[in-house]
Amino acid sequence: MPRLAYVNGRYLPHAEARVPVEDRGYQFADGVYEVVAIVDGRFADFEGHMARLGRSLGALRIDWPMSRPALELVIRELIRRNGVKTGLLYLQISRGVAPREFKFPDPRVRPSLVLTTRTLGRFATPAQLEAGVGVITIPDIRWLRRDIKSVALLPQVLGKQQAVEAGCFEAWMVDGEGRVTEGCSSNAWIVTAAGTLVTRHADNLILNGVTRLSLLRLAERFGVATEVRPFTVAEAAAAREAFVSSATTFALPVTRIDGRPVGDGRPGALTLRLRAAYLDAVAGERS
Ligand code: PLP
Image (cartoon, rainbow, N blue to C red; front, side, top):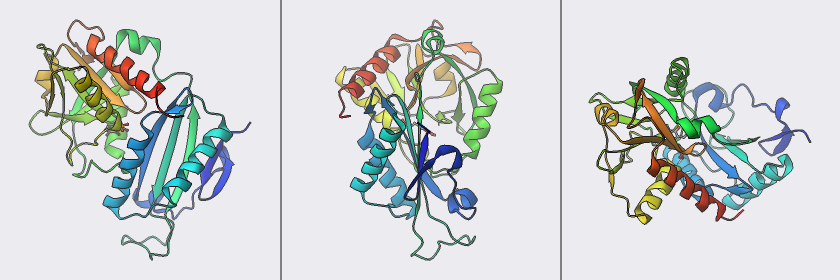
């Protein structure tokens, strides 16, 4: 069965799927996206991702390309045709195809919708779960509307590459006051020496992760002392645990920050508990 992509009303072989050269997503990064994990045939946090998609579209004044029920139908059909049981859905909506001019195009130009899926054997390797991953810290050089899940990801592309070249999984971006904003494609968390879970509050300076919100709810249910505030790189260096969260990592232990071990250098107990609880919650979601 060839892998298919959905592009503006057509299911096409993935390798042949194309957008026109004047798609505004291609020329201006004038578009938004979502990534949703599919675990054993169930979406992780589907409603949360759709809600954030609506907020991103609204912030950029891009119309939904079709009704919510129709979109959900197309998504499910692509996943069915591609036979995805475990993997991910990528969804991108751009302002559409129009002659290249900065201002918005004629209102009759319809947004472009692209959907792809990917089958994955697993979301993390055994080594990542047993040993944790490393992060580096880098300056946050992004714009001031990081709450919009826009496809303009160049700072994150550069940051991730720097992380990989340093043998790390992720780069944590740091503001002018030495406070971690978030990872290039994940939210950043620590557990302090006193056992308090800390992650930055959501405003225009970070992407409010859908996974982040679910993990905060789980922590509350467990009665874990939680502070939603910025933390500094120095505070992270003194933390007992650290982790990243995203649609594809869930809660993934961070055991090295800038080459130095976090806590005892092993994945933290609270991190692993939150990861397990998140996956349990996904197993209970509708398929
Ligand atoms: N922060 C950034 C910059 C991201 O790109 C992502 C995900 O791609 C996240 C946080 C995590 O968000 P979510 O949990 O919704 O995947």
